[in-house]
Structures are given as C-alpha cells and as structure tokens.
View (cartoon, rainbow, N blue to C red):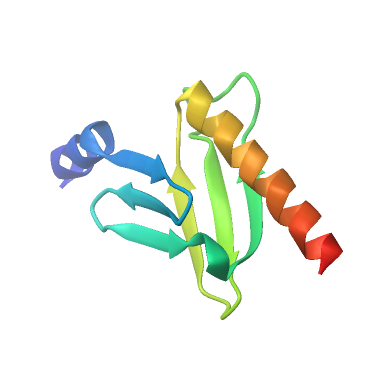
Amino acid sequence: MMAYTVGHVWTSTSRLTSQSLEQTWIWHKKIDLRDLAYVKLIRIPGLDSVIAPRLYARTLMGKFTVIYACDKTMLEEFKRLGNELNAFRKRH
C-alpha cells in the first residue's frame, strides 16, 4: 500500500487552466474555477520537503478539495489564484 501511494505521489500532475484546477493522484480531483468560493495556500516555509504545500479549495456548494504541489511555479500560481479570487469576491 505504501509503494502504491508513493508511486501515485511521484507520478501525479497538477494543472491550472483558465477553466479549472485539476490533480491526478490516487483519485482524480477537478474543480471548476467559476465554482470557487475560497482558497488558501497552506505551507510552512523551509519545510516544503517534509510537509507538502497544499491548496485548500472550497466551492460555492461547500465541497472542499486539497491540491498538493511542490513546484515553485505552481505555488506562485496558487498564490495568484487566491489573490484574484479575493479581489473578485470583494468586487461582487
């Protein structure tokens, strides 16, 4: 079971498009960006290799998903997504 999980962690992919946020892992996770109500990047700087950074995302219907990432580019995109969502929610 441990090897199965590690294999999925190493081969998983995360993708952020203009329409959705997806991650393949043991389960395929997909969230439409138009349904996002809240996102928060959770990480402990300096310990990224021990405790994986993650994006906590909640939809307007209350469903939540956790997307993991370790790539600096993806982490920056997660920050940008959070900032844009906060700005959008404040305008509306």
